[in-house]
Image 1 (spheres, rainbow, N blue to C red):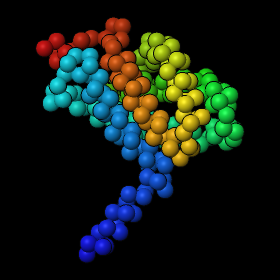
Image 2 (tube, one colour):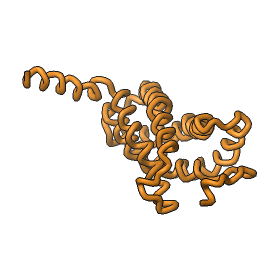
Image 3 (tube, rainbow, N blue to C red):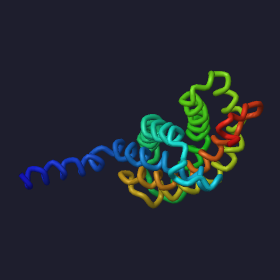
Image 4 (tube, helix red, strand yellow):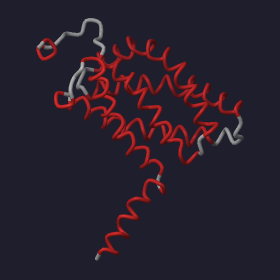
Length: 193
């Protein structure tokens, strides 16, 4: 019985190695809600027991089922064009990503998270308009640096894990930007008390 259970556990533990998308999704499932809670603590001193668990769940859901698969697809797609592993190639790849993938990912994040908050489409679009450029300006510095390190030093099979670690820092910033009120957005009674 113990040997059979051990065999099942071994197979389960091998899944992330065999399926890197699953590994990325699992890491985002942990990192994204953790970042939401961390950002609340850093911004407001909110203890974990008083954290906005609905917000954390939205971050977890969006990160796991939307951001991780899209980013995994991007990494697989872009790796076909960059076969050489040199510092120049890593920098070039990171810059191309910053121009092609990052703008879409940021708009996708603000729009998608707003939809999960059940905001109307117009409010979702307004949030993208208001928060995109300030966020993108920081991303222009952060992500090319992180991705140059990723593409140059990290093996392809471990890139999602490295990006997950960098994403921890970035997602705290995204949570900060997401928490900022939009122009004309009402403050609720819950936020006043």
